[in-house]
Length: 84
Image (cartoon, rainbow, N blue to C red):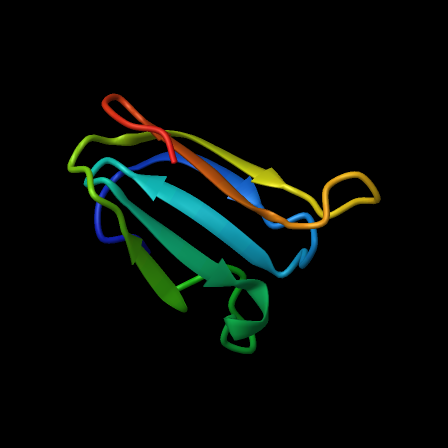
């Protein structure tokens, strides 16, 4: 369940248990697949909500994975008015 409509999503490529949902409210909700209640198959609550300095929908999410040429990992977030 999300606080508002989901416009984009991305998996964390360094930790396959984490899923990011970009919302139309300008927030990103983080879900952990390990938090699913036994017997259920859906993610019922997020483990974290990232508040960004935008109120525009999050239209694009891309996770950048750690590798030999890129030592840091992270999430690229794109909205109609900002990218960060």
